Image (cartoon, rainbow over all chains, first blue to last red; front, side, top):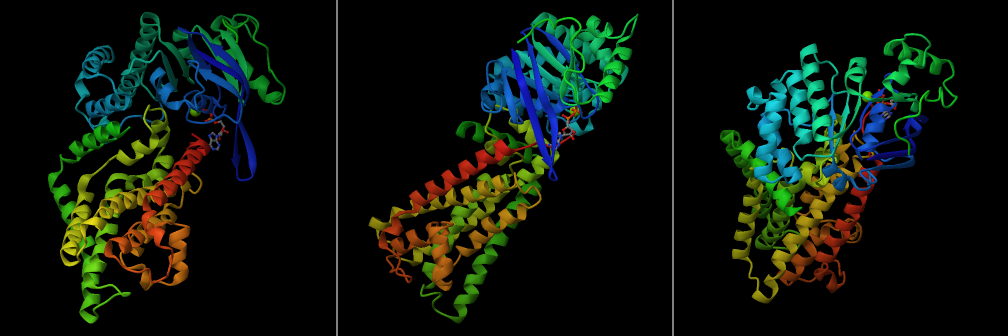
Length: 266
Length: 262
Ligand SMILES: Nc1ncnc2c1ncn2[C@@H]1O[C@H](COP(=O)(O)OP(=O)(O)O)[C@@H](O)[C@H]1O
Ligand SMILES: [Mg+2]
């Protein structure tokens, strides 16, 4: 579903070159649920933007659903749903249901199919109470659920989420997690999400990737991640260990080979 | 693409229809403000009988055709000059994940139909002008051709300005200088300007093809600058050329787009 091969992206910022992502390689198979961890500025959002065609890479190669994202943006859009936790894809001053209607027009979803999917998403995500509310008046939890529904109205086989649980209270978080878990298990949607919340990883993801300084520092199972430090380590300890070890030697690569082979490889 | 454009325009028009008073006021406002342009022409003609060698009817004809082209482009595509706002707000990211050209999305986003006021005003001036000047039928065919070409030329200017904003996100004003400045320039017969400027808007930025060159043909006038006669028929070609340039610039701009760091 997703193939990334020595992907790199640089930005020129006032004369200096920032390597946001460098030499990133991984693959995601259909039906996987992959979580992506990494400190702030690690390059997670930049990676997501390249996967979704928003940014063109400066080096390397990537394929999503067999397409080169930045060159086949419109074809890709039908295959992929995208959620940004930090910003909405909806229209601030329109009621939620009008936003959905615009999304329907953009994706040319047949009216009857749209009705059916919207009803389904409304009951699963409990949107019924605020469909008529302008997006700017929604709580963060409501807005996030609205955003997730909007990303799925065209029934994409791949869903990519950049920090979907950021800022949510425990109840909203549980609701979002529950929905994503079911979407992956029952509908077979391939899901890739980034997060700072280790709970997301533990409860949802069979596979975890850790990105640091634009590089892949770990790629494997959650159990494999725990095994990075000896003894009965928590996932938190393992992640801290990896962050710190990369800080000590930020230029070597890879910081630490994956202790057990990732479930799939390119 | 045209269908999607129209559907989106219709959706936003319905959204705007929730505020009918504001729509009515803005439409009338556009009509009145652009009406001031005509007032300027009237004032000029109270003191003289010709402007740059053209009488009142002819000047109104040139104004009306250019005004109509500009107003149509303004109504349909001028939202493209908001591109830098979308870039800064991050909404351009969202447009790139949709299966619709971002150009169509920017053009239709928050479309408000009140700019129709200008279209009506320009059409009215053109109608009055056509009453005053005698255009034989065998040259009249050029009028729709020149309005359509002019609309394409102004749209292309907006697209070029939008493309420039991918590089200079802080300077949408630069682009507006060309669109609104260009529109004002075409209000009067080019014979009131110097030869240098006229050559510039003929061979570089093809504003002379909005109304001047085809207008000379419709009005059956000699070119005061003595430029070749066949230029009068070149409006569609000039429009196609600048549209192509705008398309390429826009594509290059989107490709260079670097989003915003979060
Ligand atoms: N549009 C941009 N222009 C300049 N620098 C950027 C841009 N986007 C990201 N960066 C830089 O790239 C690095 C990675 O950023 P990002 O991918 O947003 O990290 P993360 O999402 O993991 O926090 C940071 O150093 C950030 O400042
Ligand atoms: Mg980020």
